[in-house]
Length: 407
Image 1 (cartoon, rainbow, N blue to C red):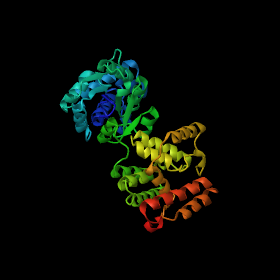
Image 2 (spheres, helix red, strand yellow):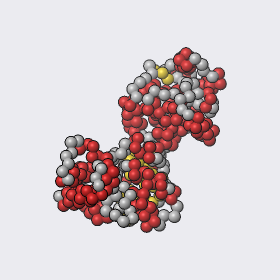
Image 3 (cartoon, rainbow, N blue to C red):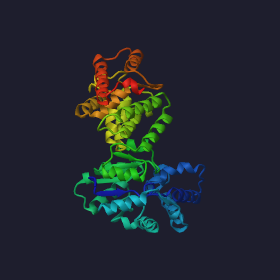
Image 4 (cartoon, one colour):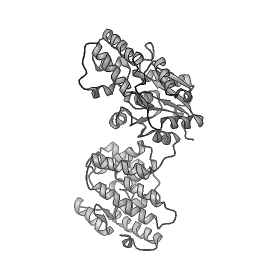
């Protein structure tokens, strides 16, 4: 069932893709005010924030002109069908039905006024899933933080640890952080990963299915399809031999796990695919461990995140890392604490071994791989070398044959 009992949902960009109607309404308002929209894509940032914020702070309107512009906006949005120029995101209806059936309390938290939100929810028959709507007003709930605080009070939330906010923009995530609850930043709306991560999102979700998984709290390892998609995306962001290396680590992990009692070969393959996912951010050394761990952690893949952390530390000591320490001391200390608190298991050991036998061109002898690393970096700690040999012998005993026979 998961620990979250109260689920607060943003509306625009989270439950429905309201972009077309909102962009058309903004275009209409700006033109009625004597302006001209040259590039509609520049208006996408206005999906989510309060109207007054968009007109005054982003477009530079005076309070008086903002009032007029908001009037024109609503003229199109409410009177010319703009509010219905949208569609529900895939999987949202099924997600809401599931959560409702589980007894969760579902609340809409929106920068729209209550009437506007209610009309949209009723039109798309989503109102049946929600306990109530917390909407903005011009008195004491102009900003998302104020709306969320009001929603928490009205819902009777006693423990904020049991509540979570789901939204697609910085203001949703900031509101959750200020109020004191966890948050899920959705990546299929109008905010991107950088915006949501910078705002402090607890988790990130790429689909409605992912939202449900995060709320349930039962994730550890992504599906093979999701893992491949993440690796492909990462390789597009930072092309390099690390993609081929990751596939070979995964191949070795699956081969070994398939011959070891109690190990899931498909799970091992996925963990191998994602062990180096921190390299998506660019060429890096120790930073890829830090980045990979936190990236997978935000996606809710706890076990995969652990592997991204431990794969470079078969001795469990940060100081044995081979490569540059390209993160600051605070982050290094965080990694030390994480390593100290982490209880490794067979999958950690397996990926550590496979990382030591896989090169971009294929699976090689452990001696060749370690020699290659030593040649490139100028050193290789003896304890780390000895540990790799131990892991090789350990898994050979479990398989009942030599590792070289798998190549």
